Image 1 (tube, rainbow, N blue to C red):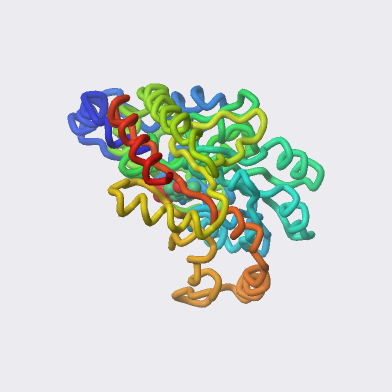
Image 2 (image 1 turned 60 degrees about the vertical axis):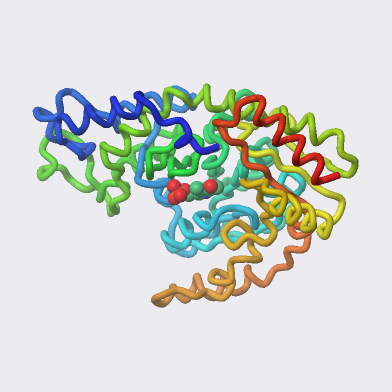
Length: 394
Ligand SMILES: *Cc1c(COP(=O)(O)O)cnc(C)c1O
C-alpha cells in the first residue's frame, strides 16, 4: 500500500515548482505563483479519476471526514453509525462536530453489517459511515437502500481503498460523500492530506468554505471575502498538494502492482487447508492494498500470527489485538476519557452505545489476519514471501 515506496522525479518536479515561486499557500498570491495551483489541479484530476463532480482537498483523512460530516449539515446530538473495525479517525471526526458515534457490528466482509445498521437506526440517526478497511468494501448496495429508505447520508470512508470500485463506481463516489487519506502510509501520499468527493453541489460548496474558516472564495481579495457560515482551518498546503499531484499520476500503476502481488499471495494461500478469504460483496473490486484471510478459530489465528511474526514476516496484522483499529483497544472512547468536558448529551449517549455487545464482531475479527501488500516487492520476492508464509501456516 504505501505510495512512499515509489517516490521519484514526479514528486520532485511538482514540489520544485512550488519552491521556485515560494507560494506555499493554496489560495491567493495570483501574480507570484508562476501559474501553479497544485491543490486546485489535484482536485480537478482527482474528481475526474473518482468519477465525482467535486473534490475538496484538505489537511488529512481525519479532516476530510470532519469536513464531509459538517458539509452535510450533521451536528450536535446527531447520531452517525460506524463500524467496530476501523481507524480511530471515524469516531474522532464524529465527536469533533458534536455528534455521537454509534458503533455497530461488522460481518464477514469485515465492514458494516447491513442488518446491524438497520437495528441501530433511531430518530436521531443522520448518517451511515461504512469504512472500506484494508482495500475491500462494505455492501454498498444494501447500505444505500437503507439510507434511501430512512433518509440518511451515506458517507464512505475510502481512506484504505483508493482505486477499488463497486458496481463500476470508484469507491468513495458511490455514496453521498466519500473520504480519502493521503497520509504517509496510504496508497497515494501527500505527506499529510485528505480529500472529500461528492456529486452534491451544496455539500461541495459547504466543504469548500468550511475547511477555510468559512471563506466564500469569491474574488481575489481574501480580506474582502464574506463568510456565509462558521468554519475551521483544515486547509492543505500547496507543498503537500504538490507531492500528492506527483503521486496521483501513478495511482493506476500502484494498484496494478498491488493486484499482481495480491494474486500471487492469494493463489499460494488457496492451497492451505483451513484458510478462507474475507468476503467481497458482489459487484466489488478491491484495490488489493491488503490480503485478509480467516483461520477456523481465534486461537488458530492468534498462533498463526505469532508464528508469522517470529518467522520474520513483517507487515502482517492481527487486528483483533490492535490498539488503533478495533473496538477492544479503544478504552479512551469506551470510558469517555476526554481532556475537557464532553457535551453532556454526547457523553450520556456514548455510555449507552459503548455498552453494546460486540461478540459478532469478535467472532470475525478474532479469526482474521491481514497481509499488507507492498509496491516494491517484485514478482520473485513476492513468490518467495508467499511460500514462506505458506510453510509457516502449514
Ligand atoms: C488513515 C485513515 C484515516 C485517517 O486519515 P489521516 O490522513 O491519517 O488523518 C481515516 N480512516 C481510515 C480507514 C484510515 O485508514
